[in-house]
Image 1 (cartoon, one colour):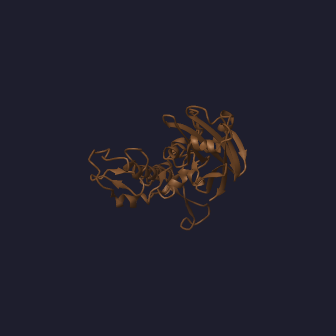
Image 2: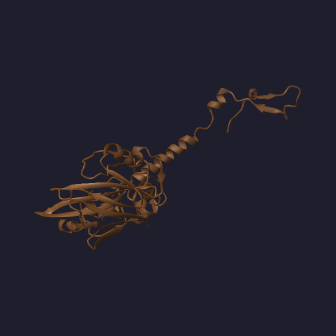
Image 3: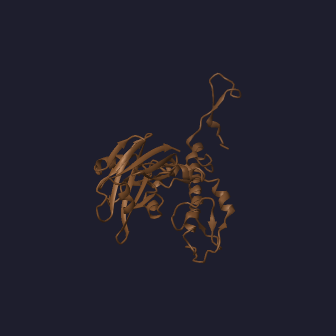
Length: 302
């Protein structure tokens, strides 16, 4: 409560002081104002610091990303994210063996009531998200960086998704670009020795798809071809399409149909697992026209 001296109460001239009065605060009164209440900015800062302290409890000691539900822990209570847990047999904090998946339901409940920074905050993203919204946002965050998807080039470029095509068109000018949802990709000189990559970009449905044909010699004198399509886009966008690869010739047909990979996933894992169109050099000769091999590529919405 602010106290007032008599000289702080002035009356209007010609009026009854009991009915008409106003308060003129002096400097001494202002300096004695209560200081126990924080300003709105201070309150926001304190709240932000408390939130940061809470979210820091959810940092995974392996990948340093946030541990989100389902939240797993070791027998001593140290948290691990589910993806890192699959790769570990010992807790990275206390080193005890991890024999089973133990969930921390209380931390899961707390996580559901917190906001977590986007994993690309260091690149410029300022959003804080719930644990249910965070994965979908990060899948297509404009600050996410992508590596050059061109195989076999040893290119070290990386940048945002909307710059990938510009990079490919200006730094990898040998890549052929075709328009249409149903095209024929011609791989030339398929009899070249050693590991060889053929790359083409197909544009349709307002997206760009990259066909990669890779030849490897996995065993001595045994060569295999691997053909796969990846979308220059996010995994969520890739799920909306189906690609079909087809070899035709001499009354034979070899077909592969699947969901395209995204450039976020890359094609190497598909090639390593043979999750793509696979054929050896003998089969290639059945469909080849001399040293050239045509592959029909069809893109359709899923």
